[in-house]
Image (cartoon, rainbow, N blue to C red):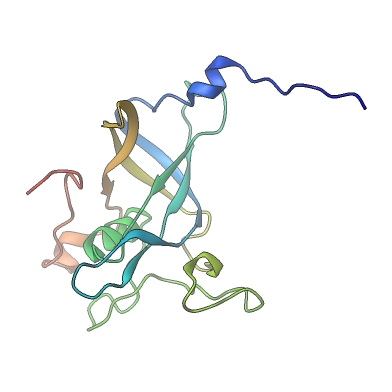
Length: 175
């Protein structure tokens, strides 16, 4: 029996460097929902991260496709609203008592389990929409990583139509 070794370039092992700080046009690819790592200290229940995957567009500096992930924890609904508004869409029932992300999450009934977010498949108007996001870098375990600083709203006349909405200007700012 003949064996072989599988090798990798040092650059690939070190991982991709983060994209430079700035604003980027992005294309919505998919949600990859999953339970968060930590349970709520009061309820003991794990929250859900929607993990929105987007592709960076129109940036010649990158030789290969680059993706960003916005975790979008359900515990911070204002960030989810900012995310939806960045694509020029409103939340469904935006002015009602229970606004929701436009679309549905049980598009593939053969896989869907309500208590397992990893089985949820999104179908809706966010698919293939573009947005502008502001991206920054931070330190994670001694390495630079990208983080989304803000989703830039593209809902026409948002401030006039929805005066109570205050879009975040830096989602990573403490306090």
